[in-house]
Length: 415
Image (tube, rainbow, N blue to C red; front, side, top):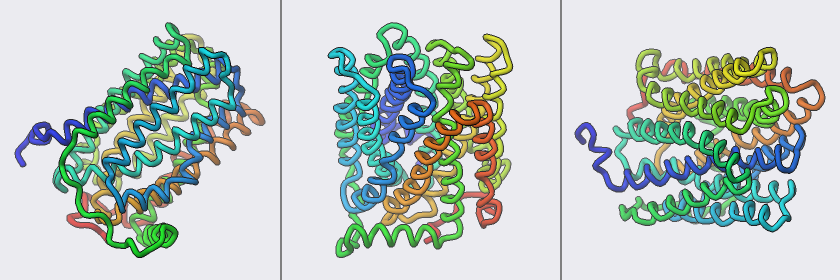
């Protein structure tokens, strides 16, 4: 392939456009759901922790089964199903607001159901991408997708802040519904055949799940990446439960200022995605992944310091924290995902991706619940500082594994 040929590939462009629109809507709805709970339904720290937990809890229930489905069926069709299902379920929130029967319990149900379908989409998507682009283009494709997702992360929260101010938090979710429907349409227009499904159809679903977990845990590189992801997922859950309530009750940020803070995170993600290849080539792939965790922890620690600052300075510190947190996440999102896709053969990609996601996101709702409890018990600031230290400590498994010695992507699958 010649330079730039990725953008002349109609199938990839449809995938990129659809996922970018869906990402834009996702960032609108995430902030809108949180603000609906915090501002409309007056949720406290523990209730916000529960909301964050039920968003991630489906990883414990559905992800491993989704991995089996992904390896045994059409990944594109599963992604379309997930888009349409999420659009339908999210429609309950604005309807409930208009009808007057919106409640925290309803938000929990919506968050859990959309989280289940997101689990299906997020397992199918990284398994589908290598069927559309060549091995040599995987990093380039991930960079393009991470970059557009970062742009959505910039525009989405700012749009969410404006939409919440104009329409109210529940009705702002309509933007995500529209984007999911367009994403499903574009995916349905891709006609490129998928490779044959896994040949282990004689295994039961449980046997296939157990085999995937065993393979993942026995491989030195994949196991180290998964352990780091679990630690990171746990402390991300702690942080996620507390960020919005900290910004609204301690910093007293308005919805527009919240949009600025999370928009700064989007800017960091965009620059991180664009810089990821250069970071990996200058530091080496493995060391760059280790450095990401240390950097993310350091930037996250800036957020609780905003409590000591006045007005606009506090919002600026929060924006800087979110910028650095997202920059590191995007660097990992390009380089770590490319390593995963290169190390795992296509026939196992769905199950092993699902196993990793199960263990990583399975730790997140636990962290969110503990984070909500810690916020009530010891305060929001100290709990956020603890989360920052935990994020930095996520690098430990990589330090004691072959990952630290990797300079570039492996030339062939490691299994």
